[in-house]
Image 1 (cartoon, rainbow, N blue to C red):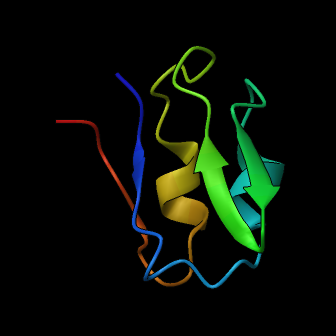
Image 2: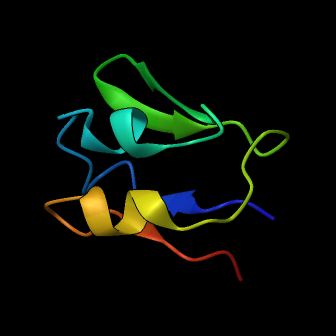
Length: 58
């Protein structure tokens, strides 16, 4: 499983991209997107998001 990013809440700041140790996050059209194949569910991105647009996998 991979973290979920709420595209409506994401402000495109890129904070999560810089904190991801597996480089599973990238910016696409000013929004963060996650690659579920490389996400290791460490949840570091959740703490780095200033608008709480990232949530744990269900």
